[in-house]
Length: 204
Image (cartoon, rainbow, N blue to C red; front, top):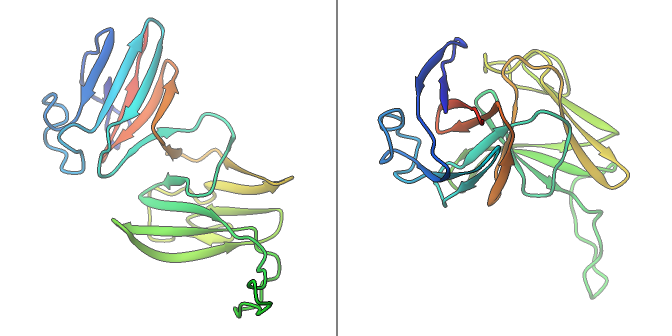
């Protein structure tokens, strides 16, 4: 594991062994000063030329940089820049069993929403998703984060395609990250965000 500093230069290195490698503040000097890491945060399991990263019920999660378009499910958390966002689906309103219709603001056909996560179990602003796709960025797109310098001018896109929701990175400088649910397979030169530190995983 090689630490990648915010300026893109390489920092320290944490050697990995075949089998399970524990990652967290209690598992190596490269991790110990990151207060966003749990004491035992994740496990990286090396099996020859393949690897799996497993979230060990960490407080702040494990994020892997996307390398291609991905389908996202309701409840999926993504990270662009310093923004933590959760995707949820929005189903068309249906009357209750007794026939009473639920009142709400007009729904022109929203298929989902993005909610800003500002703390543990604390949600911030929510953005309804409408049309074929919605773009995210610092300056351009339907959803903007103008104060986050780590978000590119046009960063990512969420698309609704035949009942599936697809997340695409639009060539952003810092990438789009998917929060790991359980575990996720890694390839050589995968980038993993743990706490506030970015690491490149080099496999044989």
